[in-house]
Picture 1 (cartoon, helix red, strand yellow):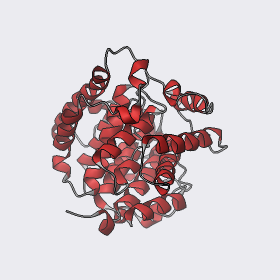
Picture 2: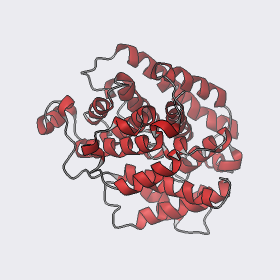
Picture 3: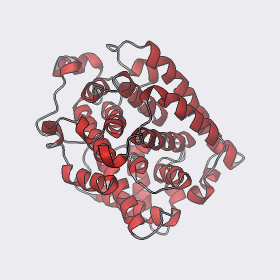
Picture 4: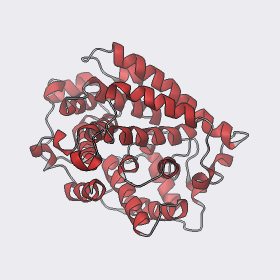
Amino acid sequence: MTTLVHKQAATGALTGLALGDALGYPAEFNDVPTILAKHGPWRELALPKHAYVSDDTQMTLAVGRAVRTAMDRGLLTPYGLVRTLREEFVDWYQSPENNRAPGRTCLRACSLLKDEARPWQDASQIDSKGCGANMRVAPLGLVPGLSDEQRAGAAQLQSALTHGHPTALAASDLTAHAVRLLAQGAEPAALVGLLRAYALENRSRYHERWLGDLWRRAQDSSPGQFITRGWDECLEILDRLQYAVRTVSLEDDPCLATGEGWIAEEALATGLLCFLLFPDEPVTALRRAACTAGDSDSIACLAGAFAGAYLGAEAWPSDWADRVEYRTDLLTLGALWDA
């Protein structure tokens, strides 16, 4: 099994995430014919000269810094992580660089999180399962030294601060788990089966230590019923993904098979589909993900995280990696976790 140290999986995943974001950002909100008319054949999509990223990378860095700060203070705990996540999310919300078409759910929740007297559960948008929940969770698949309970609880918690729908929580947990499996050397061909087994194992597990009474904001009769709704939607999309990997044409928009990625479980599935179609061609996977009718930057940033976790830092052309925005911040976190 390949180790995170030897292939620099953290650096590879974070770099891939940002490159996918920068490649997909100019294509977001366009259909495929429009993207092709503007940018040419999808297999030749070029990284913009100024490789600016969206809020996807900005919020990934916020989660990464929050986790690093919380762990610098000791063991990763719900209380410690909520504190640092809240600080980072509010800083992002108020930053003048927060001008990259941020999602409404994140903006609403972060505005409420500014009130330090308000329980974070009251800021959570309990009905939202937007892809903002899991496009930023990759750091929790890369941080070494966490228990399974810490990794899953923290992945769901970072989602819950803004996107409280149970499917957002489950998709975030699955996304972090996929990144972790690939970083540890799992074979892409086995990945969907491994994720399905993980979803079934966790289907009724509510992480109360991390989520508190979040479930009470929904209409479910118990915490188990609440979280099961989310895992069942993720299991459904994993079944669609398993079929799509075997049947889709490489030339068709992946969104036709697994959804446009505006919601969490579809972003996970379509980002994974793009990676699984080209597991040993990371740049091609990014280009396929960027040339989609859906949330192109989020789909491509997830595909990049998966490819980079699997193949490591050497997956990415240096002339691309060297000019992506926030390169120093990405390298700092990657080097920390690869070490």
